Every structure is written in structure tokens, then in C-alpha cells.
Image 1 (cartoon, one colour):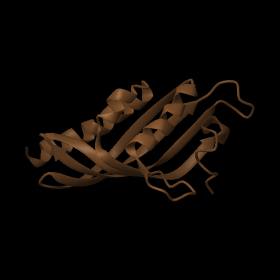
Image 2: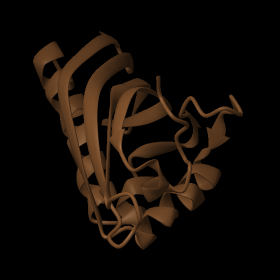
Image 3: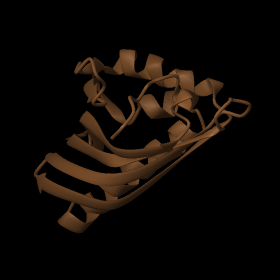
Image 4: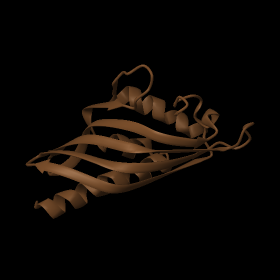
Length: 148
């Protein structure tokens, strides 16, 4: 693959992530990551979480009425079968019937490392830095602390 093919494949990987998480297809979601993938979502605990732990936490989205993730401004540094990348995100989360409103929007940056395995790019590490949030933080049960 050439650089343009690789960047297209890596960008498509982010879109498959959005489609899987927004449609709550956790089986498809798991196939986008290496089995040893780690996740750092800049929570107060500072921990990196393993794939199974992260997937278990992500399943809490089942209780939401909906989510919609938007990704833009993808940048990649590709070196053979390894890559680093980042892209901006906005995620909308809806849980109806809450005092204080049903919507929480979060904007931030995903920073990933990738490996190509059997001709297919997978996420090896993912960190998420929330830059801003607006709306009712109770929509996500305190997953994100108030941002100043």
C-alpha cells in the first residue's frame, strides 16, 4: 500500500469505529483493535484500560437513547506497518428524561497508534483528550469530570 491508500484505510478505521459505537455493535467494535490494545480516556484515575475492560465500560452506552460521533482533521505518520495518528472528534450523547437536560456534547482529540496485521490496520493504543463539553454531564453518569 502507498501513503494515500494507508491514510484512506486509517481514516476509514475511524469511521468504522463511529459506526460501530453509534449502532452499539460491540462485536464489530472489538474487531477494530489489537487484542492487547490499551485505552486512556484522561479520567481522573489516570489508568490505561485493557480492551475487555474498555469494552465493558463502553457497553454502558446501551442505556443511552443515542450517540453520534463525528471525526475530522485526520493526521497520520506512517512507518511501514506501524503508524501514529490523531483526529478531532465531537460526540453527542442523549439520555432523555434527565433533570438538567438530555444532551451532552463532548469535543476533543483521539490520539492513536496503529499496527497493520494481515494487511489490515488496527488500533493498538488510544488516548482521548476531552477539550470541552457542554450540556448535562449526568447523561454519562460522571464519566467525564467538569471541564473548565
